[in-house]
Image (cartoon, rainbow, N blue to C red; front, top):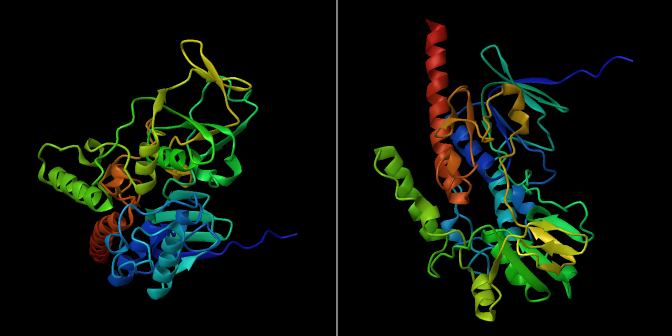
Length: 365
């Protein structure tokens, strides 16, 4: 039986990922008049916002979370929009600008090729003069290794699969991690369960008046400092790790934000600490962060021991045909936010346009 024919396509640019960073890139690619395709492995629009925990909200009002060209409409009766509203905005944004998103397309590898890059998937192969990787981090949850994790008889799950507090009612729950997801999940679990919060270092709470608006302003200042070559003021990290959203402030008032030092390991029934004390738990929620979802770039051999690809801004230093969008401060301050995605996408597409024009002139000569 003959092998099925592989569909082959040629475009100027392939964008891998159809979430907020990929859509922002698509907006500027459309304006630049380039031929491009956005490949997204999801069944529906909305990126990672489709899979976040039900109570998650943006850190600032809708008007402070725009993608380029079209501000997010406000959510009726709500100051800080929820995940469903954000998904709807991303869906309507994609439709509004008629962005060429193909889904579900799972990219399995990116390879160097003559005058470009080859993007492979079970649905076909794309030859592109440049590639923008915008896959984010949500598909790559990180859980550290501790003794006894396999022996623990209770339920273990990561932030990425946390379903909300209902199924934990009446349980003894261990919440692990010192960031926003840990504080917010702890805050709501503490209303229905007996919770113990453990962190590697004392949690750093931001001032109560800091929200997404302040964070973006601080990230903008940090970017300007880097571009000017002056001393970095520390950016968002200098303010703390945890934004005091309403639910976290309420947990503080209840006395539920007390953090304990990290345990040394898990047992069948719970956890044990360095001083030999132990506590029983029914469940453990690992709010321990994510890593960049870059498996599709593995054939290029660009990643270092840190797990990152060296970049100048968003552009790969070793492979300038490749840009990386939306992976956090590594690829520009605030690039993993809605408003920050547009800023970094503009820069990346501008560089791609200039590079392709220069190659066209070189080939013409």
